[in-house]
Amino acid sequence: MSYNLLKGKRGIIFGALDENSIAWKTAERVYEEGGSFVLTNAPVAMRMGAINTLAEKTNTQVIPADATSLEDLENLVDKAMEILGGKLDFVLHSIGMSINVRKGRHYTDQNYDWTQKGLDVSALSFHKTMQTLYKKKAMNDWGSIVGLTYMAAQRVFPDYNDMADNKAYLESIARSFGYFFGRESNVRVNTISQSPTPTTAGKGVKGFDGFIEYANKMSPLGNATAAECADYTITLFSDLTKKVTLQNLYHDGGFSNMGVSQLVMDKFVGEE
Ligand SMILES: NC(=O)c1ccc[n+]([C@@H]2O[C@H](COP(=O)([O-])OP(=O)(O)OC[C@H]3O[C@@H](n4cnc5c(N)ncnc54)[C@H](O)[C@@H]3O)[C@@H](O)[C@H]2O)c1
Image (cartoon, rainbow, N blue to C red; front, side):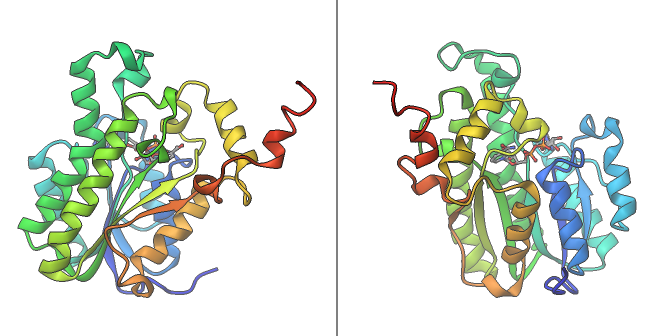
């Protein structure tokens, strides 16, 4: 269903790798809601080519950018405004990567070069993106910027490894930059803390299958899917949420406020 929530709005969507990606689903929903945008991803991720299918489907263009490179980001923002014909109303940062996770290095035995690379890609890139937009005055008044995060920023999930620290940093950047962007041009900045979701990034976390099932059984509404995350994101891009800023918003079927659920208890009762 379309509500035309984003009619006339322009933006940039980072992070659509394949059709499972949260950013992919969001691009499809933004398109349905009448928004126009450019897609971007790291040049290496684009070699897969899937993003071109999405670009065709949503009648848009792809501008490669490594989100850790200021030069790439500057080029991206300039080109986006050129292609879309004006300043931007929304930006989705849907980027995450830990080499320690990818290579199976334990949290207590990190390779710090990898840790720094992961921090740069997963968290600092959010600052770099916003700083580029801010300096170029590229956002329209009452625009909206959203980053994707996970609850391991607040609570311990051992296998999430150094991504937990990256997400804590990301959420802090959202608040700190959100203050300045709000004062400057009423732009709001929020993070969405999403349920575990079967994507390339999600499935890279050790024990993901067990963990996604656990979260599903804990949450009164069950896990939130990538498509549902896209639905939530478009509300944050719309004019219906103008005074929501500096928030970390849980989109997790209720998981974050649960202690224990009957479905999880059922696994343990009778074992004493
Ligand atoms: N999947 C989950 O369980 C889950 C849960 C909560 C939050 N998130 C977050 O959602 C966001 C999107 O991840 P996803 O689950 O859709 O997985 P995904 O693997 O589809 O997306 C991650 C994206 O990050 C991009 N990326 C990596 N390095 C980059 C760089 N240097 N420059 C630009 N882009 C780069 C990848 O190419 C990819 O498109 C991430 O921030 C992730 O941490 C995911």
